[in-house]
Amino acid sequence: MTTSKETEVKVGYKSPIVMGSIGLLTLVFLGLLGRDGMVAFEISRRTDSLQLPTLDIDSSLLGVLAGLAMFALAGFSLSKAIKNLKTPIWVSIVFGLVGVTALLGWLAAEKSVPIAFIAGTALVLAVPIILGAMAGIMSERVGITNIAIEGQLLTGAFMAAVVSSITDNFLFGVMAAMVTSALVSMILAVFSIKFLAQQIIVGVVLNVLVIGVTNFLYQQWLTEDAENVNFPGTMDIIKIPVLSDIPLLGPVFFENRITVF
Image (cartoon, rainbow, N blue to C red; front, side, top):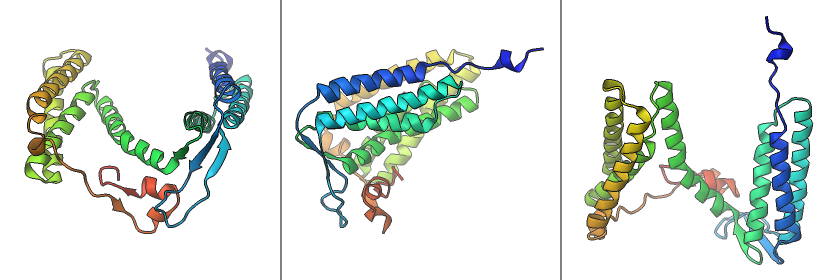
């Protein structure tokens, strides 16, 4: 019979070592050897009714402060590792935010950083990744290793652009994307379940096939007649009353297109 000591899992010191190393690099290269000049973090947009003050700070000073803060978080992680406890997830999140802030300050020395715009754009670009991750989780739950998610997304995006351009209707484009993506997933399901083919190999083949077909059609068809088949336009931005007026959070979460909501 195994005892509790024998089954106890050792946490290790990987997290504090990595965090300390990144903190040291931030302190040296973004702080002590960083760029001179002030950087302005614009929290509010110029069109917002409620304007919050802009945060101005020296770029190299920001790097030093960020490096020290990252060292402090690494020390906290080390204290947890000594007690054989995992580093809390909030520590990793704060550590990443501090590092990104220092990097933005270094890149935007003598310039401004529109925080609301960056956060909103990041959320929009994250939507396809989130949908792909959810699709992968659902596939794993039913016992299918779906490597063809990228191909499904690319097929849907291609057909949505073409159908929306031809019909001048976003709804038809979305429906076409759903149907064509489902057909790609059906091919994976048939080969994997009925013919017992290796799921990863089939998924990789489908990805390569979709990339090749869409690239060929784009070069031979869409670029030649872009106004008719490659000009779907964009959906209208929906503003949620009151909530969209909240500084920083409003433009990011409550002022977006229906695909983000």
